[in-house]
Length: 297
Length: 171
Length: 114
Figure (cartoon, rainbow over the protein chains, first blue to last red):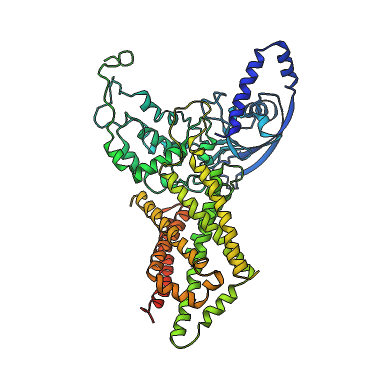
């Protein structure tokens, strides 16, 4: 996460404080809130029907969008769709950085549109879809390969010692310290920004990508998991952990402070010199009392 | 020939026309709007390929000293080697050598940094996700090591300049 | 082979090149009496006859490190089973030829080849 992201956040906080402050400060806030316009240069792509063999058209459309303090890039895109061009296509859902659907490439850097203040991007903003995933239309990309790669690393608890199927109603023990070993990586939204920023993904279509590898580490570092050897087998191959060359852009663009670069380097260390640690790891034991409220047998 | 040519053409067009992938230029080489480690990544790749190609040429170049050695042991003089060296002793080739020296020092030291980082050292420790969530891998010791590498490379560049231009070319 | 074994080789050859390459640079500059002295045929001869075996080791490390590196870069450029095996074989052949040509130079200096 870049430094500018923090300034958005702190800027937002100051604004809220001012809103609740005296009328004088609210007034000065509104004078600073004068509307201005930005030029939004948006990438357009139209998918052609299957029988049409002509090359699909890509272009850029420029829109003048009025903004004020607090206008996010997503607000600007919604403004374009509502007022200027209803055919503009982009994904979004929660508008507050939780769902991870509105990832775009703004001025060459991946951002969640809903978490990005337009004022921080300057007056001319170029909005492109995320890289490295095939286009569907305009700013919408196809996440299928991304999801498939996530599934490849077994993103679930693997327990070979207990039967967790069916009416399983027990919990596994975990201390807060053990939780902190992976909690950061569990914050991943799967928004695809890291996948788009990664230079290896830019040319290597088989590379698992920062998200899937960080997910693999998240489960390996989980004290309740027993599938570490299977997972390390998957990531210790070509087009996996070792195709990462520590460019760090994944961690740089992550909107949730997940550190995929850290996770991938840990995977390499585990694969190369900490094999013993993996072999010795015992998944944590069951809590004796059954979970009553969730799954009464 | 035709089949091989078509295959090469197919590979090239696929590389060039890959749909929406950032590709070599925007993915590998365009680092200036990115983080510091991305800069080092691009440089490591460029210097690696550059020095690699140079060293293959260098092995071919130094094989002329063996020819000269054979001449000397047959009672001749090492004229092949002397001619080659005087052909290569000019500003153009020495500027190339200067770049090779810079690139190889950078590639070597950055390689050491990568070995450390890839083994989980100098990239900080895992911490609970608390605000502000600055990734530990991008503010660990490796970042300062990276800065030090660039400084050391340029200091040694000055020494290489002294050897190649002041001693080598007699400036 | 597991990728980590190959990368371990890449690490070790890299460190070997760092050590032997530093020696090589030293011989070309302050230890060789300056660059213009170091490229004289007499200096080259003495370096090869003194460090011949180390040079061979240097060559082994270099060819592995360079051509495995090239292979990684090329395999990240494009994917496909046929492409990757072509790249691997091309690297083996070009790398092998480079290694043999460098070895020839060293063996001639050591008096093994005439």
